Length: 229
Image (cartoon, rainbow, N blue to C red; front, side):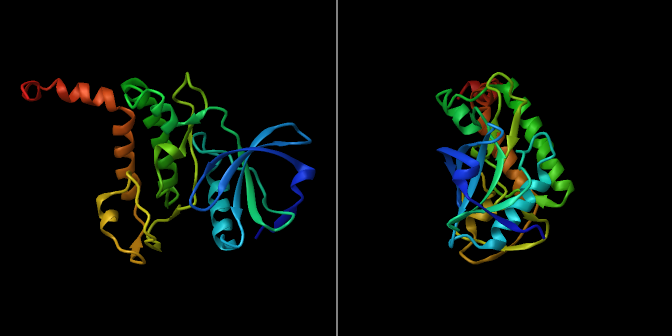
């Protein structure tokens, strides 16, 4: 197994603002001092983060990153010089998440044409994961990054903290979001669940509906039996 290398942050990176937070850590914009490249550093605070969980997320992120619709994770597992956090480095997205893009439309959605582009790109990434017998398990608009506001084919999925192998078992930890399948909403804390690809499939459908809000309503209202309602 690749060793976790201790890094004196001030010597290697200039760390800027925080870009986002998650269940297991937070992400900050940074610049690699030698190359001047803008990057995103994902930090996992210690001792809250177990080393095995950090290594698992890094391994999945790095393994999946060659796919064009998955965020690029650079090689190397690290911890800060003061040992306060583990971290790894990813490419920086200069635009926004799809949630932010949709919110910028006043919740009207990004339209049918752009939804098809996004959905096709995300579906390609999820198909790749499923062919490798991996399930994302946390697919939502916040975890899909838009790299070009004028080109909705340039999106990448991120955050593999909940990713697991098909048919592995996990404990339910009282975490439900609006993209979760109905059966997950009925589970109780510490109930053992079997990881299944259907979790991602449901999330994809929910995700598509949210992106195409306006276009979907227009389509539904075009049916004769609904026009009279």
